[in-house]
Amino acid sequence: MEKLISTNPANNYSILGDVSISSSEEINKKVKTANNAKLYWKEIGVLKRIELLRPICEEFKKRSNEIASLICNETGKPIQECQSEANGYTDEFDWFLENATKTLQDEITHEDETSIHKIVYEPFGSTAVITPWNFPFGMAIWGIVPNLLVGNTVIFKISEECPLVGKLIEDVFNNHNLPEGVFAEIYGSGEVGKELAESDINFIWFTGSSKVGQGLYKTAATKFVKALLEMGGSNPCIVFEDSNISEIVPTIYDGRFQNCGQVCDAIKRLIVHENIIDELTTGLKRYIETKKVGNPTLESTDIGSLVAQRQLVLLQEQLDDAIQKGAQIVTGGKQPENLLGAFFEPTLVTNVNREMRIWKEEVFGPLLPIISFTSEEEAIELANDTLYGLGSRVISKDLERAQRVASKIQAGTVEINNASRWLSCNPFGGYKKSGMGREHGTVGFRELCQIKVISMSK
Image (cartoon, rainbow, N blue to C red; front, side, top):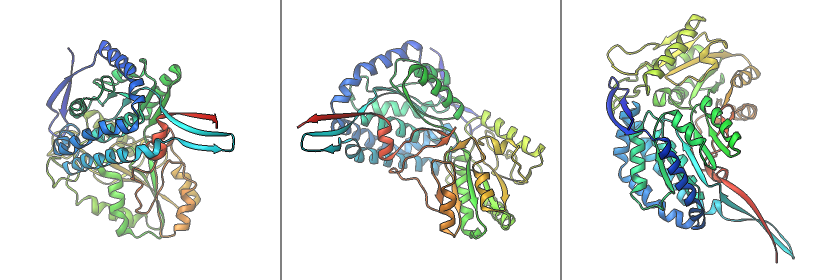
């Protein structure tokens, strides 16, 4: 049987282990079993589903250190960030468990002397959940748990970059006697995910690149099933001239360089008022140069590696294109000489123009282009000059202006100053090529459901 090899991108791509790649026969069998289970899973009701899933959440909590270590080894993410992922997303698991009942309860829309009308939220059925490598545990929780809670059965495929995290997730779900067919997992490359999406499933839930998401959307259209897609981003951060430089430098750094810049919702284009661009660039340079790039297993490390050599190659190509077109590197811009693996220094780039790949494409790595603006209108135009529309940030002491600008940005979320949108109750998703539909909160739960109206005489 063909194997999927897991390697460590922060240790010269050393081999960590392997899993068996799922065959067409295995995929079809698991989909068939999921379809056989979907009526039972729907009819046992949300309270029973919560009861069955809660012990799984508790086991994930107990194994958080093991989860964090696997994430660190397979992705090169610093161990402190891996621990935050393991703990933070089990907290989200808890939120889903605690809020599913009230979110999914029947909703009365009209009542009079003769009739009563209500909305009932029902599952779609068998669901393909396909997730990326940048938050391998977190995205699995986001995709699997709400779908199971609303009554969908799940066939799960994790990224080929982190199969060992996927194997742990499968083991935990299988430890708790869920009814046969309610949850299954498959392994392999994007072709395996494509085959799953084309199989006899009722719903597609996907987080990943816009290119792959668009392909899955075409598959869903051919099958005439719903697809919920959270895809790429090129988030703008607009900084107005009244901003306090020393206060905002850490915010911008964290917003760009977490997980070595491999975050769909990261700041990817810094748009700064011309009066403060030099001061802010200098402040960011000094701050970045205090950070340690290195072994992600050490708690002293701030930035680990990229997830794979192919990501390193793409990042270098994007940067080379910018330099050829006149960009200037302020700091970083190369691989550290003393590290073996997919490492790249945190990089600031100025003298950016809108024909550069680092402006037009999503940059999934530790590189931040900086461009100036003169007026509010120009800042908005620059912010919206992208195929994407996932997130954004506006920094200004003038809250009236910040809210005015926020209303004109074409993005699923706008964070003003230091107010993070990362709450489980907030819907998450994007405009344009950043996706379709929303995850999280009441809206996110209901995206996973068929909406039925029942009207009856009294």
